[in-house]
Image (cartoon, rainbow, N blue to C red; front, side, top):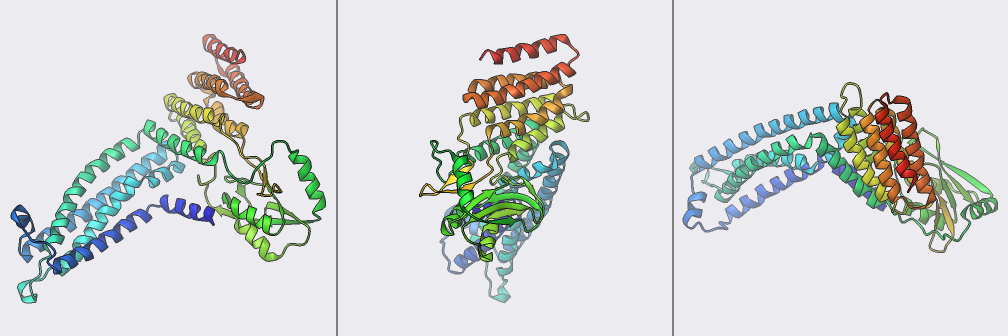
Length: 438
């Protein structure tokens, strides 16, 4: 349940309608509340406040009409500016980066505030009555509309500055890197059962499978990307019905309809309702999301670098910036605790065998494509080797160092094949040799 709630919240945050709609509802509520206070003569005008709150019904109607018209026009302008920014971002950085711009809360707030101000003025305007209609002038509501108008002018200036900055390559990369950092901190370590390092997990796994005679498959209902897995829910179901689960996919992978997501081992045949509950723990969708997909933000940085290295753009500086950001993330992962494939319940009973991501997989996702696309850019490959030297200094244990060395060897092989300048190749070999000495 918690996983589904987080998934729903993530979907709402990344939508372009949720926050503006919420602000619009606040604007409608503010209009009703302030008009109600005006009917009760909540305030007592004094001094300059009396001057600001004073005025007849014609003045109030004029002010509200001008503000409403202006806000609606500016809302259209803001929407147009946003579409232009999205178009530029899509062509320069890739359509997958549009999610980050839609996720930007300032863009959503600006659109919501202008539409909410328009509706606020329309609602208040409806309450203004002339003498023949038992004159009523909601002075407090009109004053609040004036304050909104001034605030919206300031907000428009902030918005234009924000848009001009947000489409710059360095800012986009920094924003994606920030989301990647938050994602890695959230996902690693992952708490799902406890693992005893002294146990032979593979032997125990094979022993338990031999004792559980019934095997049932959990299949996907439709095609799509595995966006999230309700880990806690699966553990509870495994404990409740005494099951052993083998999960064959991890979030971010693509599933075909009727493909086996997991195998369930049990002593007796499993009822259909239990299979339905197990199937409900796997959330599929049309696109990948960062909810539990550790490689999502990495692929965004890689896509920016790959586009920068394309012949049509040929921007090695942007690619090098992406490599630097990926370096910081990989250095963090050398110290992170990757979740084990073997998950135990509170009673130290093996319940789930998953397909977790590991350090080697994250390194492959980060650097393989950049190395392949950077074949014609010596500056990028040399910087990539320098980054691997840095990561090697942080690497812990033989497995991590072997992974870094494998990538360094592939970069060197690419350089030996592609470099035409001996000095460039000499620089590459010098950096590679410095890694071997560590």
